[in-house]
Length: 298
Image (cartoon, rainbow, N blue to C red; front, side):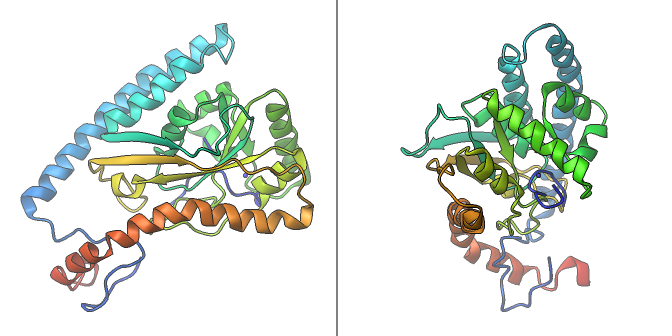
């Protein structure tokens, strides 16, 4: 579940060698020093987890699509949440949700989050306490089963080009969604991080929020990078903590204030994520030193 070539804050996509005296402080922890048995266990576990979650998804997804053809989408929300939560559970991650006192659960909002791996949309769908849909790259709607489900469920396609007609369609569909009380999930980085740290944000989702007068809710997913990352198929045992920060009003903001809003939201989202990465930096440094030179240079 995933904004315009300018928004690019909607879709999933996917670092360097460190010397023996410099650890990887960017969050891309090198764990190649783990023992062979441990590594073998992780890969065996990964194969089992991908198999279980894949079979579950491709079995349950068509059934939910068929169900969505005969009942109202809001009535189908419970089964969709069941799918999302169990998919993540079968992949091997635990999810905890924490709400800030300033988060208004009743307001239709743009939920703006960091983006790490392919499971992020399912983590968020199961965690957001509202009826929600996503801004998602149009190309994802061509993915077998998944794209079919996302289109049927009402996700908003984000064009990968800049044709005015495509951008207008995205804005029209987004406005129609929020006007009908549907909150939207946005990944403003427009791609998955490869370091664990939060990248630069694009303006699109924030410009829509400002023009629609819809509030923004910053969301931090801490632990997703340890669970799975773009550069590896490994699924590690992990707990993902989803933080819903204070709701931020946009109704009184001027267009010129959108960049400031974008940076403010980015700082809020990044704070707990970068704090967790920095707290693990000494461990990462030790691992890098033990395994120098890295496998890629051997």
